[in-house]
Length: 380
Image 1 (cartoon, rainbow, N blue to C red):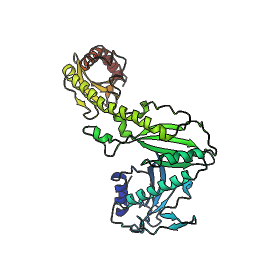
Image 2 (image 1 turned 90 degrees about the horizontal axis):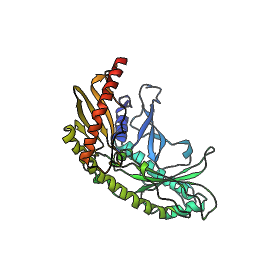
Image 3 (image 1 turned 45 degrees about the horizontal axis):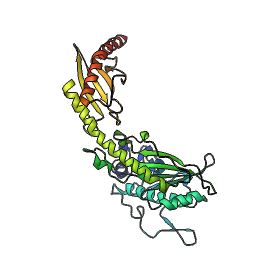
Image 4 (image 1 turned 120 degrees about the vertical axis):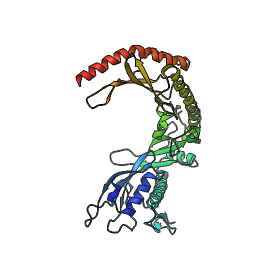
């Protein structure tokens, strides 16, 4: 994103939105809408996280009047979304009397665009809740009534000619601060786990309706500690509703998160056990203890060993990658091996024995790796 091609006030607001707000907004496209200043950018498409997906909104400033508030164009599927309005008693729309981010626009405040997008997103969330609540589906109506009291739930109603009508829920799980559980936590934002629940829309209540589509979703950074892909979801019993299902899932998740945090120390002890066998590691991940690198010598042949330690260690063994310090390819990059996992391993061994057995494996493997490096270098 070439922010220097935007007028200064617009650039300041866009940079604040992308780099300092907690919304997690991305910029997909930028362009100029000015005929007088075609090289000056004043319009862009935002990808705004919502309901475990993204919504696209176009933000249109005017390069000829950069002090004015922008227009925001919503997606074609949201033609009935009219923010900053309230419903009258007769069902029509009337403008709200309260001020909003557009009514008191201040071009000198770099946080104004961020405040506007946050306010519009809040309006959009309320709009989608109304849409879901108006669906003529007894089961959905019941589900919504039982979970509305949970904080942070997002809903999205989708329909169209080419896809079936359905309502998607994003339900935040486990009311614990995972960030505070990890020493030296590098995460800028609070890590969260959501359950995505997707219901097809029907018109009749069925006592033994099929289970909705379920999927666990977490923030990408959390995967360094805990992978939701490895979580087996509890079974959805016939006739069950979300209010019954969620407590069982949250109890199971909380236990697995506590175990994942405890396993950091297990991995740390393993990395510490490498030092007496290999010498002090060249580098190691100090927070999650997922990576370590040691220097190994076989005669005059020296190479690095990168250890990639899985979250399920010691049930799953580390993957090893060897990197020569003496052989390079035609691009000048050091020659590396493929990932190696076929070596003796038992999760019941002491960490000191694990390190010793890895060294024993490397003594033999170093000959194969040296031969591989020599052949690869001859081919360059």
